[in-house]
Amino acid sequence: MKESQTELHQPSTEKRTQFDAVIVGAGFAGMCMLHKLREMGFTAKVYEAGGNVGGTWYWNRYPGARCDVPSLQYSYQFSEELQQEWQWTERYSSQPEILRYANHVADRFGLRKDIQFNTRVESVILDESSRNWTVTTDRGDKATARFCIMATGCLSSQNMPKFPGLADFKGEWHHTGHWPHEGVNFAGKRVGVIGTGSTGIQAIPMIAQQAKHLFVFQRTPQYSVPARNNPLDKTEEARIKADYKGYRSRNNKNPFAQDFSLPTANTFDVSEEERLQHYEACWEKGGLGMMLAYADSGTNLTANQTVSEFVKGKIRHIVKDPAVAELLMPDHIYACKRPCLDTHYFDTYNRPNVTLVDIRGEGLERITPQGILAKGQEYELDCIVFATGFDAMTGSLNRINIRGKGNLALKDKWMEGPRAYLGLSSAGFPNLFTITGPGSPSVLANMIPAIEQHVNWIGGCLEYMRTHKFQSIEATAEAEDPWLVQVQAAASATLWNACDNWYLGANVPGKPRVFMPYVDWVGYVAKCEAVVKNSYEGFLLQ
Ligand code: N01
Image (tube, rainbow, N blue to C red; front, side, top):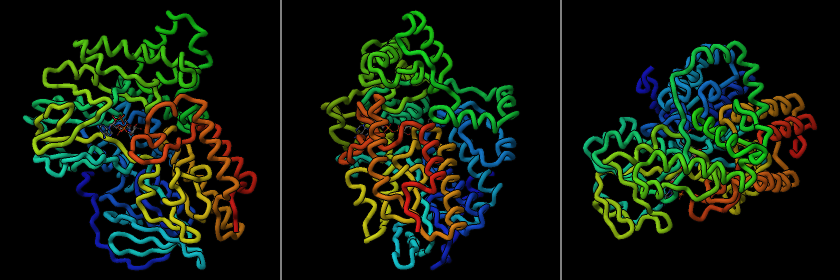
């Protein structure tokens, strides 16, 4: 089905409605939660700012957008029929294919009738006497519900730095996270890309193929490993689909909820020759496995340096101009910033129509009416692409006026960094759940299984409350505080909090520097199960 056919611009007719639950967001989390609640016989309403389902995959339509978790794993498992019938075409799905999948799910399970599109939730306010949440939107809707479930996504709120002069720029500009539906024609244009994270690394090779000239403004060089995307191997697909349930269940017991298990050997247990052969094999295989090459790759600095040196050697080998290659050398710990996967990223710098502009340290001076001023030189541009990432994990929650007990705003409670128990619930906000919220593995796990784990946990919790006639549930401060300590301790055992990355909020000026995702997926799932077994230990049920 073509997207335009499914876009819904229905007028908002409901002025006040009571539901069992309101869900904010119709990305993969919101759709799955809606399906779950309906199966359980609850009434639910979803508000979605976008014109259709898909969440971050609805907005991030930039050229080259693609998932870097294999398609057969980055998909729902709640329906055996769905996972058997849907056929992915590539090892790593492209954004259009993921969006087609999201639309297929919405159609197959009739989800749209409970989703109101083009509607942004502005406030979510607790009425302490009735114990209901009132949700208001930018279109004048007012809905009340016992439960409010924030399915607002971890990487959905754009980070758009305040570059001086942007308002006077005479050309066109776009943020990758809010890409025009009709696409952008770069042919014959001088294009500037700011940002070389996962997004920039995917978009740059594609834009370079079209643009007259591409200038890449690089503040921090990144490591990247070839994705090695290919048409999906049908034999592999048949093997997995023959026992999809077993495959999912095995992956669930792996780090990151993916089809790779931790090696037992440490880096220096093997000879240098063997180690290099192994890195070469990881490089040839492609994908995210390089960060787990050895058991201590992500925890031991000296071990980690052997990975970074290997990848740097590859950059030197691929990039023909040694001066450009040196500018592309990362100087941070490998995988401390989220590792990137690419298709011909470093090769792109061999093209005559591509110039790398190193803005390390100083950053950009300003945007001028004609282009970008950096290091005293003006680069004339017709188009600027901001691949500057996201206000991750807390951004989309903090943009909504969420007020709990005592009229406390969640944003104020989180002034020094997010405080939540298990990333599911925050003390003082009864019956408000966050799917893949800060303090849960979320972005450090395969997102769709992580979403489903939360959806199932919340569903189980609501069932428990219904059976035992509880009216409200919230995390206790006594459980929240030690959990925060545990989240920080888990990160400290890795090298991931040793550089400026978005896990720490370091990419957004002024954001508190707190490591937000929980590192240990397997331990986390066990902890959630133990909490349930112990009658929702750490939660106050009333
Ligand atoms: O964002 P990023 P992203 N001046 O924050 C630069 C997921 N994802 O959208 O490193 C100049 O990583 C910034 O520089 P620096 C994935 O989890 C997944 O690329 O802060 N430059 C950096 O180079 C990923 O990690 C997929 O110094 C500025 C870039 O902009 C996450 O999304 C695909 C700047 C931002 O990189 C975010 O990736 C895409 C400034 N003022 C994304 N501000 C797949 O599944 C920022 N930058 C494949």
